[in-house]
Length: 555
Image (tube, rainbow, N blue to C red; front, side, top):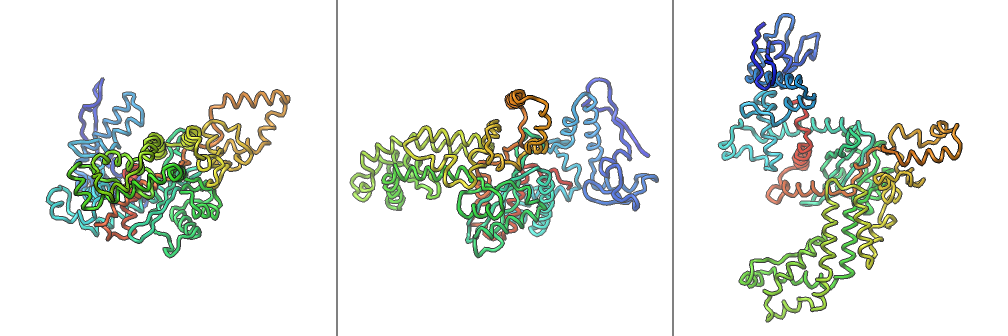
C-alpha cells in the first residue's frame, strides 16, 4: 500500500505532518463502509459504484478516483488541514466550513468541483447559470454562448432531463425538512397570465432552534387541477394533492395565509383550519377606501390628465419643455397615487394653458390644496406598506403599525379594516389577539377562546400543564394564597414560552407576490413557449437554490 507525507502549511505551532494512503483517500470518496457488504459494492460521492474487496487492496477504487477526480490529493490535503485546524482549538462547525463551504477554492476551483466528476460538475454549472440567471433554455445551444464558455456543450433536452431530476431530489429534501416540524402554515395566492391561472403555494414552519428564523419553501406553482372553475373545492383539492405529493400530514397544518377574499375563507373552512388574512391586503383596501373618501375628484381628474398627456401629440409637445413623462397609476395598487400626484405637480408648469382640453382636466385651486394637505398622509401610508412587505415582519409588529395608523388618523374609520374586530377577519381569536399576545409575551391574558385557537402551537411539555390536572397536583399541598403568588411569580419570571416560535405565522402573503414578480420575468411575452411544468421547475429551483438546498444534495 503506497503512502506519502508532507507538512501542513496551514497549521501553526509544532510541525504537523499530513500523510495519505490509499485507504484514507478511498474513505474520503467512498466512505468507510460499502453500500452492499455482500457484493463489496462501494459508492463514490459522484454516484459511481465500484466493486472492491478491501482485504485485497484498493486498486479498483483508486483507479476510479485517479480517473474521475484527478485533483484528489489536493482535496485530501484540504480535509487533513481542516483536521489539523480542529486540533488547534477550532470548533467542529468551523472545521466543517473549511471543507464544505462552496467558496473554498484550490487553484480557482470550488470544493464541489473536486468532489464531483467532470460531467456532474458541467451539468450543475449549466443548471446554475441558466436557472439562477433566469435565461431561456435555448441559451445553452446558441453558438455565441458555446464560443464564450469553457463548459462542455449541452442540449436543451439533456438540460431539461436533469432539471426535472433535480426538482425531484429537492422535493424529497423539502419533504423531509417540513415533516420534522411541529406545525406548519401554507401561504398561497393566484396569478393570471396568458389566459392561465396559476396558484403559488408555499409552506412555512418554525426553524430547528427556538430563536431561529422560520423556514419557507415553495411547494407548487401550477394551474388548478380543474381549470374550468375557481371554487373553494377546487382549491382544496389542489392543496390536498400537493400535501400528498410531499407526504405532509394535514393534521399538522395550522392555518392558511392569503388574501381576505370569500374563496380563501371558504377554502379554509373546508380544510377545517383558520385563515390568517394577509395584512398587506387589508391595509391596501383601507387606503383605497380613504382615497375614495377624501380624494375622489382629484384622483379622477389627474388620472384623465395623465392619460391625455400620454397621447402622441401631447407627449411631443411636452417633450419640447421637459424630459419628464406622464405617470399613470396602477389600478390594482394604490401606491401609484402619490407618484402620480407628485408627477402632476412637476409637469404643471410645462402644461400649455392655451389648450382648453388639457386645462379642463387640471384640478381647481381648492383641489390642489387638498392634494398638498394629504401628501404627507399618503407618504405615511406608503411607508407602512413598504414595512409590511419586509421578510422579517411579525404579527406583533404589523399590529403596532395598524394601531399607529388608527390612532394617528381618527378622521377615518380605519378600525373597520385594521382593528382586531374588523368584519373582514376570518378567525378573530387567532388573527386579532391570540398570536399577537404570544409574540408580545402576554400569554397570561389569553382568553379561553384564544387559547383554543392557538392550542396546536403548544410545546409538548406545556400541553399537559394546559390540561390542568398536572399543575394542580403539583401545587396541591400549597395554600390558596401561596398558589396564587407562585403563579404570579412564574408569569413574571418566565423566560420561555409555552408555545413554539410563532414567527412562522407570516402577517402577509408577500412571499407569493415576490414569486409572481419573478415569474413575470421568466414568462415574459417573448418567452411564452414553456409548458407549465417547465415554468414551475425553473421557478422552483430558483427559489430553493437561495435556501441553499442545491448544495445540500448528494450530487
